[in-house]
Length: 263
Length: 304
Image (cartoon, rainbow over all chains, first blue to last red; front, top):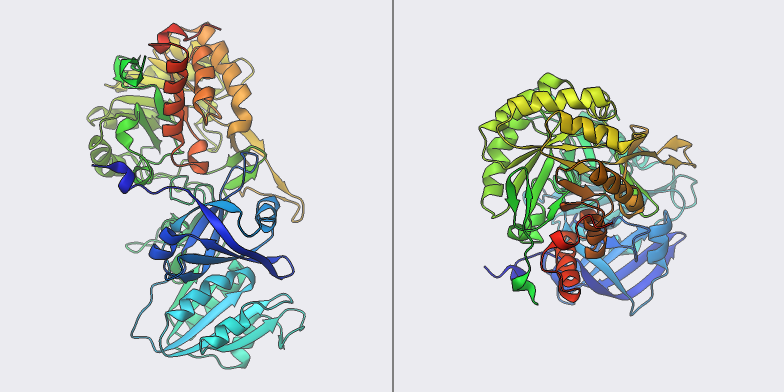
């Protein structure tokens, strides 16, 4: 067997664009043919900092996949020194990247009325998802002050509903309050955002008997399922017991009924 | 001199590894994830993630915190139990031409012995007795910080194991040689060190520890000087083979440990930064040997 032909590896990807789209939020487009070829909505990539001081990869969800151009787009928040380093990269620079990683959303072709719920920096992976959905799509997005990607969702034919915590754009309040106010309804929910938001929407989904997929986030080391660092608490199918499952390898997308939200 | 003429073989507890490169338990699963990145046939041995008698759920998340040049973990030895391990992981690893070192964990001497006994009938090569995990309250490091306990658990596990036993030592002690000697008195066929250093990180915005478990094991390039010093001290104090580890990410790092007296070396946290780190280390060792005219690592082992 010729190993080199089948092995995965970290690759240097050329940056086509890296710009601020909202305070503290950046959009990076990478030339990454292999990743674009394989990637599905809801998957993520590892980005690596230079040197060993910031040792661990940063897992970043894929916002858009362009298979023809061989590019992927990542939207990330600057939350620390690692993402701060990425924000300083310029067009023509390269960054080490590994992916696609994790399992994406499970799209059920039989569902025709979709509710898509995003919170803050959890919004980006939902854009690629919406491109793959057929039927009616309502996108509910919650932000602190600055909405992102609104026109992008609208250009795909989705109805976009926006909530901001400080009321600076549209509805003042959180995304679930907005969903309730607008009598959100559909036959499936896809959600990504802070855990508290996911928990609240999960309770609403359960009481309205709508199936829901959630994309989770957790502090990771390897991103490939080896370190067992990024776990979430989940119910076991066969009995009443629970288990820790890996967000990176078993997720990041789970059915909301699998997740135990008490932590 | 070229790659073909190098003698890379090392022996631990009567088991011959084709080269001195293995991995640190808990950084490599049972190899499955890494088999997508590297050819496991090229490793001297795969040291698997710790297994216990019954399944362990591990600690709550967050379990990971990055620190300067390193990281903290508080996984807490989450594992499916030795029986699942034997059923699922050994057949997978045996497909490859590499030795299997099984790291075993327990909360009591009886639990350690139970795992060792169950593994006695399994097709593995070596047992690594984990008396050094800082992330489990009972057992684990309690055995690794007390010479009497270290001697007793080693002695009992040796009695229940058909395989040679390596004892993995904790650096969270005042005198590493004291524990090293105690393990040898208990019958250890080899030693591996170091496990992680106990550490902590705080989120100043939330004013809370980053790890749900508050403290965790510190690993990565930042700990290499401590690891190297302890391997050096242990190698001077005992004569059994030592697997050196702690912050190794290059061939040069590995050579330092061998000069300090290590027989073999393990790549740990570097696997998270670079899934091919083991291959880079192996290539680096070979390059050093070729460029320095060293045919066998025996020529330089422990010369410091």
